[in-house]
Amino acid sequence: MPAVPPPLYALGAALVQHRLAGPTSPSLLRGAAAGVIGAASGTLIAGSIARFRSRRTTVEPFQPAKASALVTDGPNAITRNPMYVGMAGLLLAHAVGRGSWAAVLPVAGFVVVIDRLQIRPEEAALQDLFGEEYAAYCARVPRWVVR
Image (cartoon, rainbow, N blue to C red; front, top):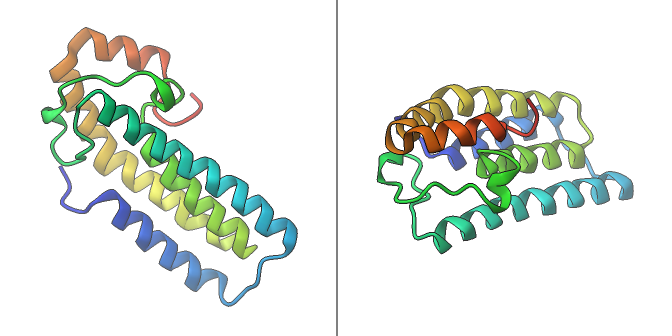
């Protein structure tokens, strides 16, 4: 498993966005759109964490083998990775607010890095831990938001 916490990847992407976009002030429309996207993304993250806590299982991304339950409801019924989708959404909200197409590039970079370095090892560990239950979950719920 990687040693970099996923929120640090998101923070790094946000800093790159800031550099790419330069100094900008959001228009009312961009600010509102960014606010809606950001609120939805934050809700996705918080809702997923709440579901994990209610099931008394770990949200620790570095040791997925410590999971005591497979969470498949709430935000996890929409995407297998609502916390990462939420982080990508926060980055998208930042790009929209800054009004920069170039600021969307780090969003794509974040998705690729998290998909390859974090999600795939997590999925392998969860498959080993939960077997057929996890395979059935993967068959019905996409890794991101769409298949």
